[in-house]
Length: 66
Image (tube, rainbow, N blue to C red; front, side, top):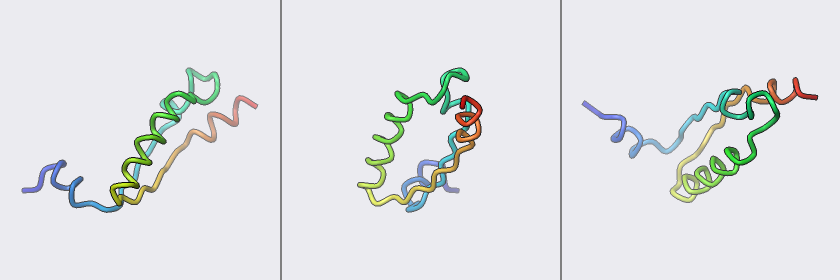
């Protein structure tokens, strides 16, 4: 039986969902520090040949601030 680690090692395309609660600063706009950390991780994964599909509902939460 494959473990999550086995699947991760064999997968070349990952779908990553980042929800509004993680993207925003308690309803005070985007959490830019967290975004910067995720981008750095995504760059590292791309350098390893992993395709990323990012799914987020954060645009709705950010838009409510405007």
